[in-house]
Length: 177
Image (cartoon, rainbow, N blue to C red):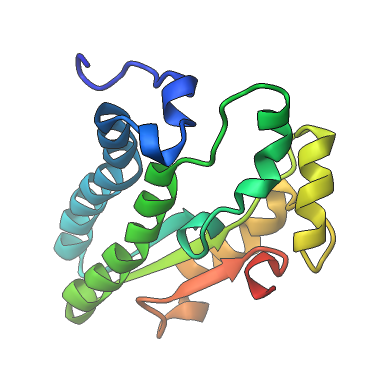
């Protein structure tokens, strides 16, 4: 992979765990985790120089709970080899400890680091997916794009000045049941 910019083959990325390729794993972890580490380093250096700041990491419900592979059964029924990938879930989960690590590491320097866990955003997904997904959400709907705005504004504002190392789960209740 030259420069790491080549797209992953969906057949490999969504492959079953038993056949998950190392190169696919490496690329997904490089994107989802290493990319966050590099961004935090760059932002942190700047914030240390200015006496503080705020980093808000973004993760997924599949970093908190294992993917329910049954949500995607309709794709396999259609003949597609589709499984929510192990690299996605594991790399998103690692962001929680990265956040806690950085919160403890930079706390005395007034750099606050928190993480937000989002769940599925409605984007015209297949109706068969939505039919399986919605019963898992107590609010009975997928997120709208702007449902997360207030959370981010809160975390970057002084209203959360005593908050660091925390995870706000904004998922309509998906992880509650």
